[in-house]
Amino acid sequence: MKVLVIGNGGREHALAWKLAQSPKVKTVYVAPGNGGTAADPQLHNIALTDFNALADFVQAEKVTLTVVGPEAPLAAGIVDVFRARGLRVFGPTRAAAQLESSKAFAKAFMQRHSIPTASFATFTDVALAHAHVNAEVGQSGAPIVIKADGLAAGKGVVVATTPAQAIEAIDWMLGEGDNKLGVQHNDGQARVVIEQFLEGEEASFIVMCDGKNVVPLATSQDHKRLLDGDEGPNTGGMGAYSPAPVVTPNVHAKVMHEIILPTIAGMAKDGITYTGFLYAGLMIDGQGQPRTIEFNCRLGDPETQPILMRLKSDLFDLLMHATAGANEGTLDQVELQWDRRVALGVVMAASGYPMNPRKGDAITGLPGELPDACVFHAGTAARDDAPVTAGGRVLCVTALGDSVKLAQQRAYEVLRGIHFDGALYRRDIGYRAIKR
Ligand code: AMP
Ligand code: GLY
Image (cartoon, rainbow, N blue to C red):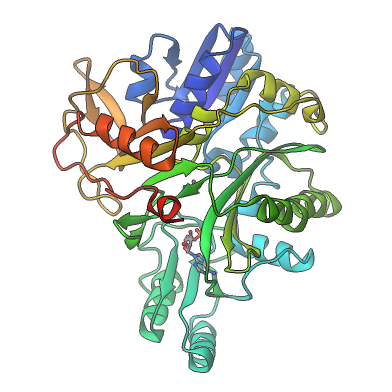
């Protein structure tokens, strides 16, 4: 069989790598892919991004199944285009992807269906938003969270610790200097969601949904801040590991019953069948109560890299079950098998990430195939057949180990052999899990 992975990040490299391991898969195409998927003889990059051109390719090449990695094509309706042409694709429709593409939609949805989340208010008017901040912060003195309503590659959220920071963030997102963050606004106009600051520990909870059945993947945690100790600006994610010790069996059951299942049921009730990966970003408080910080309509990056290193089941089989029918699959027939070891991935980013990543630096020292580690590529390209940096997050060095500490040691051991000028990486990925 032939499969197609849409996207060009580390998550897509991991999806393609895992799909290529299936004995049923002969060819894995990646569109557009990156330097790592280009260099792997088992994977084939194709330089297409237009949805109809991709669908033409799938029909011409008789590709059995397409899986979509990133949020942008999902929010733009790639699944709707493929389905309308009778093609098998795993991902949410444009309407379902609003759970990620619009914070205002997601918050109103959670409120309507009593799904635990931070209290919030939505604004289009700068003066009203300022007044809200002054009233709220004046009362509690606590930090307050300002979010742009639209896709912003993880950069549209400001956790303001002073009213002045909150006002500045609102002005960025709504005011004169609108859109310094490069947010893709939703219909109408710029909007911000202002919400209560939640305390606790974050975890990523990702499930597969076929429209009816829900299968949770292994749990994970990522590190969104740029610097050690979870300091500095938010990024797309600087490293991740699986499983997440904070998700105890009790927390897991609560997440399924209070968040995931009511979300899928709530979407169905609102007339939107949810298919695809669904990622709930959680804040888990000291009493083990989970609340939803955000939904993503896709796998996490870099969470996917450690999660898929631990997946023993055949991913192609899973995706075929998940897409057995357009609105109803057979995921109830599968049971996932996981490696009992911990997997941990460390992102190596380019100098200047996240605001202004430099491109074109030569990458040396990439290892060949290793039994317990894998270097997934993200922002890389080939120059004269040699790898160079080509984006913010460049590589995710991922390793397995019998404990978080051993997986961490192994990942950093592999990482230390790899070089490019200006490489940025955190030295403490996994520290929360080691501290526990
Ligand atoms: P989001 O894009 O909504 O996931 O937000 C990015 C990051 O901002 C999250 O991973 C959290 O670290 C932080 N954050 C967002 N909302 C809240 C909140 N209500 N309380 C505390 N931290 C938050
Ligand atoms: N690592 C966070 C995300 O994929 O959204």
